[in-house]
Length: 178
Image 1: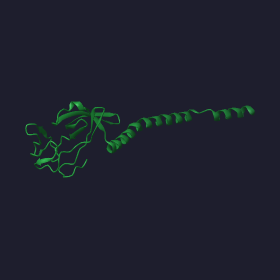
Image 2: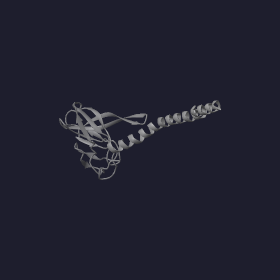
Image 3: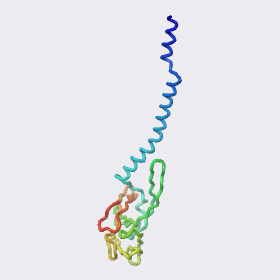
Image 4: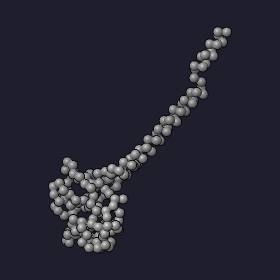
């Protein structure tokens, strides 16, 4: 009788094929869930941080902005959402007021969103859509624009100009970030 009880005890300790498949399926399912969850969570977290924090982008060396006339400055803004990375070309108007003081204007007219240009012969920014005219400091000289040109946040570090791209509500007298 002792011989017949011994195999039953061993069978209880040996993993059966069914329990092995249950454990294996659970491990594989957990691993697949983890792989799918990482990009999803990254997209949620990075999107919420991007909205709250924003980011400064290197727009080039301060030395490239010369004189006290506005200059068009181009830079690439990289945006990553999970595993998808997009590069968007931005342009702004920059005016050097001093060695460590640069004003950067959004290139979008605050009236209806057209892109205005600098006219050095008149020393003015002019919007071609509805005739708004702005002084070098961004103040409205005449036209339907409800507010001055929108300035963008900047910082200078190690001789490099950093700009934080923002968009503003159009056609309203107050500068409101959208």
